[in-house]
Image (cartoon, rainbow, N blue to C red):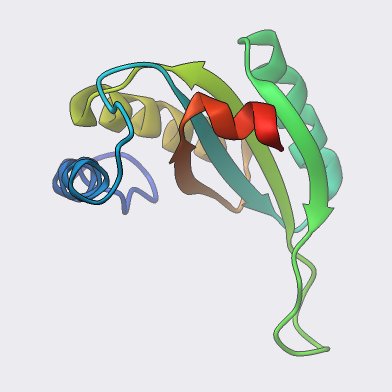
Length: 126
């Protein structure tokens, strides 16, 4: 399918996501939205190094935190969230995801874990 390491979010999935949001919300998916991207790793210091590079690229950094464990003996996992106000189509978001899959691979992170999106008003309310 793809030569992007770890890629699981396909263009088809993104097209479905955009269609679902358009059908079920009044969000303007053709305009600027608040896009949230997530990375996972077992060592927070590596996520901190990734955060510095991503911040230099203009992304806002949400503090790194440890994920809740399903079982007490599960290994620690840490999340890095970044966000940015951007305008995307499924195709441009697919390109951004490819960029982040490669970034995670090159940085030696556990994974690029995906995206979330919301209207700009959510950023102001939270």
